[in-house]
Image (cartoon, rainbow, N blue to C red):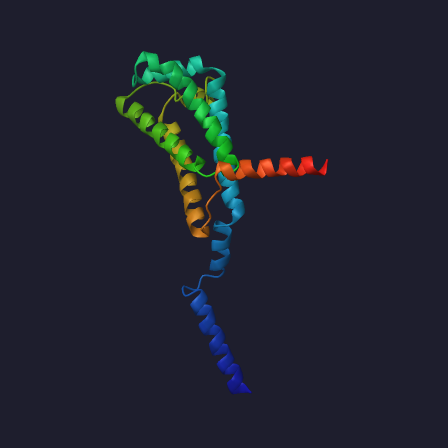
Length: 197
């Protein structure tokens, strides 16, 4: 009986080492937590809300945003007002898509964020004393700091969140559905309701 217990204990030890060779207690639980669907959803929703708020605030008063764009001196005057409307509208559309996890919207948000970071880096390099304008005329960050560095650091933090979303998708081997999938589901639900009436 004693020999059986000793062999059984050795077998259990081998299994525990194989599962967690470095001896960290609950390493599998930590991975499960870090790559849980809830962390993914929370980060995705936070990013979507930030871009939705940013786009809506700028679109509410595009004239003020146009003045901020002009201060950077990066484009001809004739482009400024159309860009002041197009960028916030794009932010809103992509934010709604990200909120519902539609394929392609995370890539669009990433592209916008890279663009914003490049412009902010240019402004810092040139020593421009302008507001970020990231959240429109009522931007509390502009009132508090009146600078671009804090906006760049914030954007870096958001880029880390985007990086997590990409890693989560790769780790979980999940790909979001395209817009066509959601529209076809919506159409099918509408047909089912009509049939029941």
